[in-house]
Length: 289
Image (tube, rainbow, N blue to C red; front, side, top):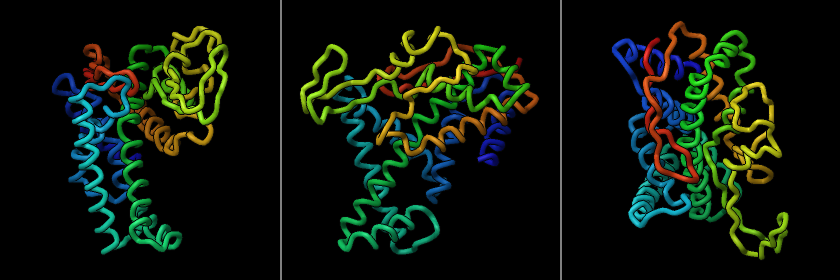
């Protein structure tokens, strides 16, 4: 992770010396696919394709997707399924020490039906990519954006890098990568004054919950020392399996960025994708002070 971060920041710094550079495109979009791709043994030449397909697939999880967005999502999902089916066939032919090969060995021992074993491995591999990229890239860019918008906190982290993990958790509270989570009531449930019938879908507005003054004093203030819990990674049996990896990427990136001699600043407001559930910055232009 540290090697990847150092390489990305070195390239980004070179770009900055020639004028404004897009931190989101050059760093935040690259680090998550490098981290998960190298771990899973995916060829680097496929990183761009997987990143694009992941961006397109997420429309199916939006609140009010248009027909064209759903069509784009369906196409991306089909391509992703085909990609990982090919990957599993290749790993069966030439297994290695990568996680996909390990999952195949594990499921072969658990499931005598080869087709069902491959289905299980396929689901895991596809989930890893879908869960690892878009949300983490948002956390990386948002961490940098919020610190540059609050230079007093940025300088405090420079003086004391041990505060960086708490700052990352405050970013996750202040502007979570997922603002809406869908759940289905397995039984009739009462939430406050509302009766939710069994089988009814409920939309949990996480972004709003994180700014509830009854839960967080002065909730609209970005405060890295807040130390409050949040729902950015879900809860209970749905708690995000990749939470430690996302935190590691953010902490490693901020530690390296704040330890460098460069002093970047925002050269304009970030650009956002027009979404409700999944937050996505599409551009974060920085320049040298």
